[in-house]
Image (cartoon, rainbow, N blue to C red; front, side, top):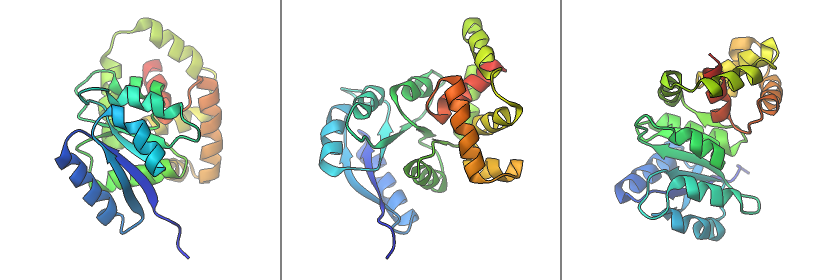
Length: 220
């Protein structure tokens, strides 16, 4: 018997975006992903999660009454919460960093390819994070251009605690690589990458891939 589909809740105030994401996920994944509910504003997210028990929430950041970052924080406070991927057009501010601190484990542009969105949902449902290569480049270009010398010093201190192999894994995350891609590049198993990544997150005092990428980039 096949495994049950990944249950996804879509949160966006644009009905056309919701319709497109539903079609993309359900048809593009050939039934491996099922959209179990939708919400049009951050105020509706917690009730929708409690009603539909999703595995993953695809969360728009900018909504009229309550934004996706506040809603992500509220979802994270629930017992056994679903994992959250935030979606945005990203115009150069610090949205992904704030979303990661709020508990999001993935960050995607709304212009990502269907394949990348599906892969992100599957990765997050399996316990990984998700930052696509395109997203990572835009996010990290923004961080690299920012003038925050104090943050840079602290990032360098934390990154300096990593072993050489842990740093290689962290840099792979910052480039938007999946665990599988990092494993292939370093000629190790995915299990080894996961173990190194766990150690990286502990040493950097963060709990998701977005913040690993942020610190590695800030460190330079």
